[in-house]
Image (tube, helix red, strand yellow):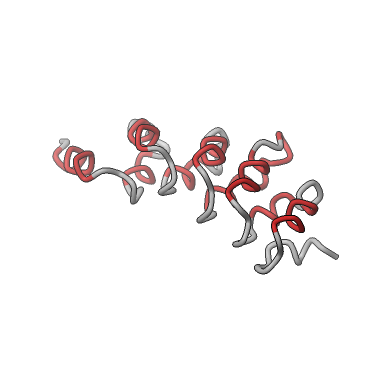
Length: 121
């Protein structure tokens, strides 16, 4: 019965942590999930694969969790556009044909890099 409740706001961090093993992807979708909890979910091994797309979309996702998302083909393009990715990683993703467009749209991309992209043939 807790599965449909996991993504709803208002749950405490301790309650979400308790639900983690059983409902990882639903917990990752919770808007109140903390950066630390999202990082824990991302490190949960193969079971976390379902949660990686949710983490990549999450506004609280920290850089370490997003880096884990980049290893998953389905979460990678979502994570490439997340503002919490380190600048060096975003710039590296600009050369990856599969996610270059998402990386170019990343709001954390510095203006100087954007200008360089625009002036490329």
